[in-house]
Length: 147
Image (cartoon, rainbow, N blue to C red; front, side, top):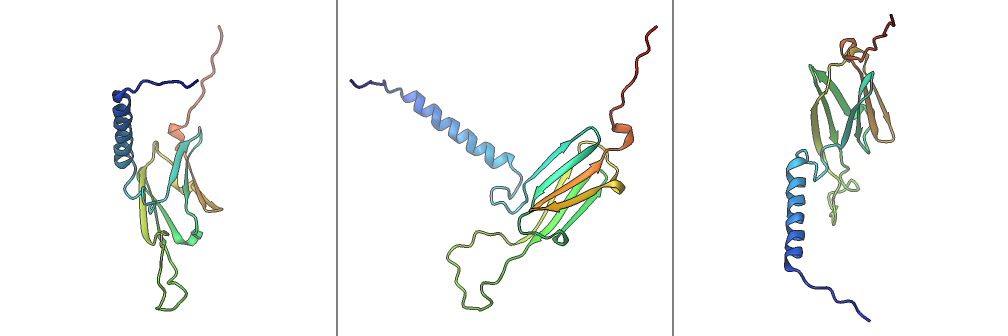
């Protein structure tokens, strides 16, 4: 026995509308260049003591990346370098998807930090920056005295 499903044209229209909504959301809410991935993807979060930024930089060496903090803005700069084929001028690429050129990504930090105590580690293509929070913005506990 087969099941018959009634065709509802409005259900199909709503699906198309939702797909268009997702398309426009992705196009206008991602950072510029993110769709082509020439800007490194990153995570920004904070703990009680620090603001932490993790950036995916595959193929980079620590010397290829510059980090600066000005006021409450963290800036990452670097350059994707490519090889010129096999060293000969007769190289013809059939597919070339790896990016080349420089990038710069700036983001506003959620709270004030102590830049002089910042640490940066680079492991397996992931750059981890730890920026300790300023003492005045760290959470403080207050003890309660019973009477």
